[in-house]
Amino acid sequence: MIESRMLDAGEGLEIPLTTITGAKSGPALALIAGNHGYEYPPILALQRLRGAIDAASLAGTVIMVHVANMPSFLGRTVYFSPLDGKNLNRVYPGRVDGTPSERIAYAITKEVIERADYVLDLHCGDGNESLRPYVYQAVTFDERMNAETARLALAFGIDHILIDRNRPTDPTASLYCSTTAVTRGRPALTIESGSLGQTDDESVERIVAGVRGVMRELKMTADGPPPVARPVYLEPNVVLTSPETGLLYPVVERDQKVDANTAVARITNFFGEEIAVVRTPIGGVVLYVVATPPIVKGQPVGCVGTPTLRARAF
Ligand SMILES: [Zn+2]
Image (cartoon, rainbow, N blue to C red; front, side, top):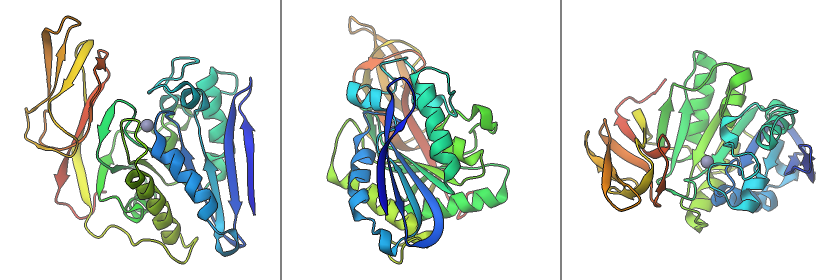
């Protein structure tokens, strides 16, 4: 059975939700797109998956959030909601009586994450980020959770897996969508596929295939792509931020191999005079680099991860 409806987050905020209930019993998998409204491949992937998942042969339930952040999607904003200036993926688990972003986070926490057994938070590089595909695999103090998360990450099929040991552990201050799931005992991933406001078929299909791989791994469907055979675990990894506000000129490209101390971006003032050079403290792969001119002090410039030789990363 397929049911679609608008989830009411209060004060006119609506979140389009589809629930596909399989004929057989199985886990509940939540797919959340559009926490960032300018990130289109996840949103388009769910448009395709809604019609492609066959309830009659499905074991379990698929819950889809088609566009989590409707104000940002319709307002075409990068990172921040046009209504309250907040980054939705930094305000989880939200507040029932909070700002628009906080109310959206609260509704998704209660109506989607807490009703799911597994959660995939689907992202790409935002409108300003040139990104190569990768997956965030959070590592916690819970070995069972770590094993489940690692299994999901391999099943998704993207070979670059960033090991993240710095996520919050307090469920009341989880900040991130996927961390909201993990701190509530639900294995979860954050997925990155696509960038720069593009809608390319390759990035969309990579997400479709990844979801199908996870459904196969969870035995919700009989078929789907196999897990990654040769994962590239990225640890250490670092998000580089800008020391200044001004114009950004990237000097590396996504997926470029860089040595420690390589310049990633130049920052100029509004008259074109160089005021800073952002360098990576570690060598590795450029996972994303900001590729449009506006840059604000403290905001991300890029992310570099070092491929590690370990076969198991937890
Ligand atoms: Zn995002």
